[in-house]
Length: 572
Image (cartoon, rainbow, N blue to C red; front, side, top):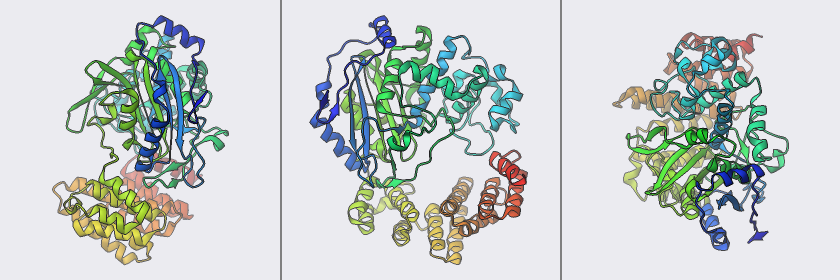
């Protein structure tokens, strides 16, 4: 049936889930249905939040009494065309990919195929591991041999979030502490392929999607997504380009709908499909998570977060952030309730706490803990974006300069707002407006490295290479005046490289080469800058200079995957 233009689902549990609910009735306490709360008033409230956040669209599924009680879709699938979001609209799940993959892995534990505490290297062997997980091929650090499935699922592999084309590295000793890592999930996925002798698509389809009837879900792009997939949108609510993922990434590449994901949450909340022992392991606290100041925030189980939302309310949850696509779920197993939603805009997590509080009736959702630093609807950054959307760059700067003291603070919301705005405008070719925004920051922070580097890129867009180099040199001088010159140099190198890739992504090869050459001259000990220059030469058609720079990158960082792969391709 439908209420106010959205469908209300009627008890769609599979036989498997129904049996599981019967066996675990003591786990989820019966609570009164609140389905009548998701009517016109709720719809208008959500639409208002989306408008304030400059997020075009959202898809939501609500769980009550162990069933999907309500599904709704609001706003636009595509801000350019005005096409509405529907319940069948497919979104990127982002990191909500991880719990689904974890659930599949735990089924292997129940089958006796995988021991959570046995090193993955013991199953596979070094030779096979190098074949299925390339970052290990050139690794001199053998600590990877200690990593177990439990370490990966509790984010204790010791890896950074992603290697981003660099060699394998560790932030911490494996097993030592929580260090959120999608890369760890990639290592586990490569291991699963060898352990099961199956492709990841076959593995996830048989163990997860088919049993839970997740018919719209896939970790790689499907042809039917050409018509059902939502567009993505930047922080101004403007449509952005989106790649079609053709490689299975267990930590980030799940495509799904709110309804499909809610079916998974029904299983997660009860342990359907898992043994009682394994489900208890998945949902018990195994590692404490702290914020940047080492303050405890929440804990982690096997692939899911565990949060004490209230004195007597414990939730299971996860968030997703793929930049211009965002997602979130939080469920209360003891109350048999939960919510999952997907949004197609970069500012989505300004809405997340409001929606989680509204649906779950808790004052402190996991997303509100000090682990996160997302904008709220009242943040100066969003106020700057809204002013720009409605009145232009002058109005945006006026909003930012209403608190001039904040513009003198590095990385303040006002500075971030103007710098983000400048970057978006450069990407759209609105160079004069971008320059105005950056100059406004430099009036208050003359030695801001990101602002000076961005201004240099703007000068090159204007065709003034001399002015570009002058701005870049000012940024390097600012590095020497900092207390932490190593961190300053890292910021400068990264910022200049980002400018180069902005040109390269627009096929402005000559401009990109000029930027990367400046970076090579400034940071001759960095393999990354030679790797970038090699890529620019390769895309411009200069094969020999590409080879020379990739070789230099490999001299500085033997085994650098991006340089190694590109060099092999060029030498063919």
